[in-house]
Length: 98
Figure 1 (cartoon, rainbow, N blue to C red):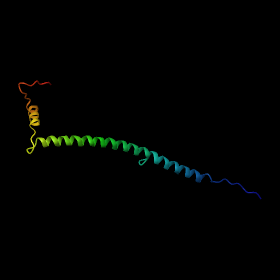
Figure 2: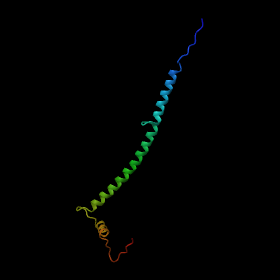
Figure 3: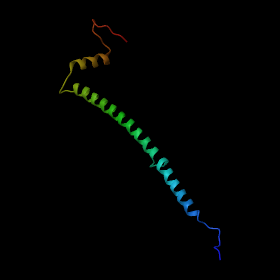
Figure 4: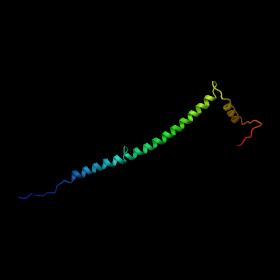
């Protein structure tokens, strides 16, 4: 007697494995924790770090100017500049350019 060939489902297991493998590969590249999302986050982080550095520089400059106008340390040149700017005054021998 010969072997009888019956319709089988031998293709189902490899098809399922291939489908699951394709899904996980897609999720690894495109998903929330995927490669592309990570690259976007890195670029955003670099931009935010540059922004933070610029803001820290501005804060340091403002702290320096504030310290120079404090009672403990008085920078007369800075005080003169601020007074002229606020009051809109100039000396007679100065030329004002606006």
